[in-house]
Amino acid sequence: MPYTVEDGGRLNNFAQEPKVYEAEPPTQKQKRNFIILGIVGAVLIVGLIAVAIGVSG
Image (cartoon, rainbow, N blue to C red; front, side):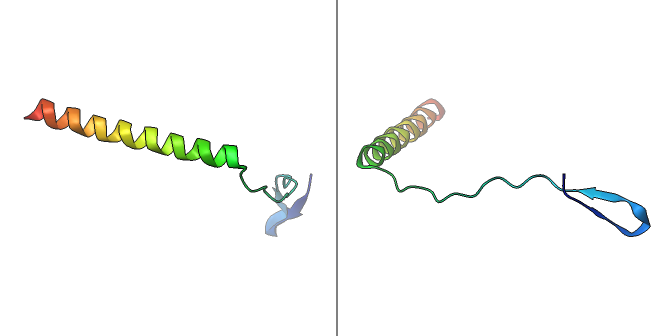
């Protein structure tokens, strides 16, 4: 484990850094799924706001 010695003799341990890799761009299927999930989320939020307005009114 990598460490350094600080003033006064204390050891300072550092975590192992993960291997870095380049992310791949989303596929067409993933893009479509993101859009569908976004629409479902927006409908859910609008529905919750409508219920809140209906209950409070």
